[in-house]
Image 1: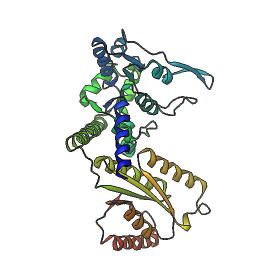
Image 2 (image 1 turned 180 degrees about the vertical axis):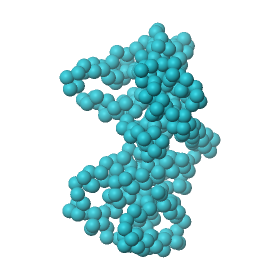
Image 3 (image 1 turned 135 degrees about the horizontal axis):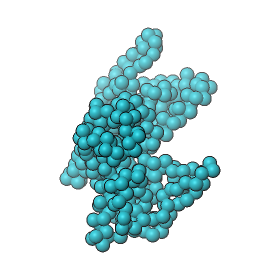
Image 4 (image 1 turned 90 degrees about the vertical axis):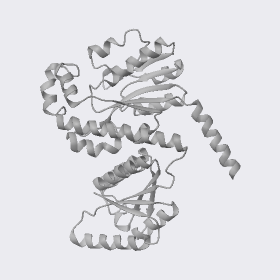
Length: 372
């Protein structure tokens, strides 16, 4: 068994050595200068005789950014028709065939046009990295999956294009492109972000100082967290393997989604393995819950998988007993559950369930976190 584990570890080292390096520029919003910085870096690499190419860059017609494309080798975009319109998309296969040493791929959270090999651009980037090509990319903080609810509360906008947290964790380097709120608003007013006709609307909605400051804080915290993870792993050459999280969810759509995202953040902080448990009681059988609820449940469990969780589905009439059994089997250290949002009678039942859970876990070294 030890020989097999040793061989598997060595194989993983070989795969890692063949994989491309991944650098991500992250910012608090559009207009902070992520694409500008990537193109500046491209020129520096080109001057140092590095085989670098532009796989996909979106300048949004910003004059200063567009000027930096001059002199850089660009891989032609793939042209295709969708719903009667001629559109352009990054040519993934051309990048892999040309196999440059480094490729610039902008807008990591972008959704590809229907008919593309992958649904999302971050999946294209994973293919490029696996082909042994180094990638420099960029993303805004509002596109990180587990922060979706916080972003919605700050901006009142539902961000539809998102990347799983584990994609950010794949990066060998994460760099924050930071501006003060005043600097960003000044760039907006000067027409350096959007057309001047759109400035007034932007100032009254997304580009408010209070919102920018909150987004800036999230971006700074996220990059600091990624640096902390990298330092810990490289200095100690180990992970927080003693921490293992279990998120317990039901078919309640909004609560389950929130528990999944918050547990993902905790697991990311500790760089640890985590699980999502759905116990299907007789009252939640496919005969007793409607199709819409079933569809939302499937989507939530898919979200958990995308965020890096191992999903466990079990049919049982004893939720407390099942949670304890799963926790023991998977050496869970922290169980995450949601607050009961039911009527008084159901709250009493839920409290009884909670008491059962506490009683069963009293002798085990397991923490219980109740998430709002």
